[in-house]
Length: 265
Image 1 (cartoon, rainbow, N blue to C red):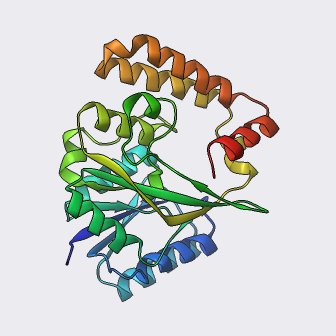
Image 2 (image 1 turned 90 degrees about the horizontal axis):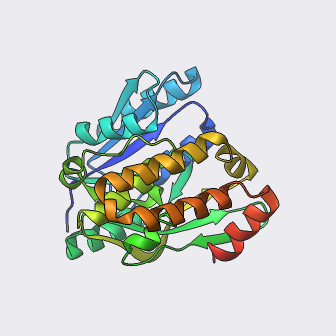
């Protein structure tokens, strides 16, 4: 089948050019060519990166480069959703690699199942090993409040469905999880494929990046956000929030041990 879809690709200057080139090539060389690649630049980027994006947008007419002042990931994503030309939007991150058949496999499944949101498994490459982050086929609300139900860089969704939910909630570090939880509460059809179609590199910086007081504040913001939608989740939501914060403040060795041995396979 022929699908019309947009790839939503946020990027900022912290990502090295080598990873950007690899991720862009994984989009351009996919077995199913996007109708639009929407590159949303958040703030100033290096001349090298600007030149790269200028060159590929001139070479491939379906690539649109949108420059923005520094407004943060949530606003960049929401702006990109509104600017996207097509109702099917595929998320892709600037530091991840998309498998060659990712778009075809996901869009075949997405359209056949008439879904609003679709994710898949994620291959995480560590220094000495590779692990798969699996997600449940049919995410349930209570487990989703404890563990993020969708690997965000694998997401495919309907533009209209996400706009009806007013896009990504503005909760730093938790914008994706908040959106998926809201989607489940509002009855959207959301699934995960039991296939690994995206890979990402994981290093210690990723663990350290979010182990700070801002992350703890974000956990409470997520809790309050859920309560506004579903006040009856007061007790369970508080319980899961405390569990997530406890997990977050664990020393790095314990944090990594739990992350790798219990949440990955």
